[in-house]
Image (tube, rainbow, N blue to C red):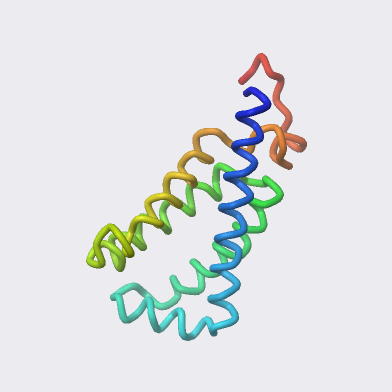
Length: 132
């Protein structure tokens, strides 16, 4: 991976991590029971609201430091696809699911590319350049 690609991946990882961390934090600050109630109103088991809030909060932090990047990217991709198909699709593209598609694409990019050079993944699970 070139320096430019590594920096680009870092920027995507940081932006996505911050966005999801803040969304998770908002769910905790707004009351997890409210989040669970919203999920139930959509026909989704309420406990999934707790799961999504925790994944967003903890996963956001993990992405910021670059740990478990592919796994967190996969989890965020699933969360975004579920948001699109349960809530946002009926709102239309503009003002509805356009941002969710962008976040899902960024998340999927991290699944494919991993954490890149500037991550704890690379430091802890260092692979030789020849093995990549």
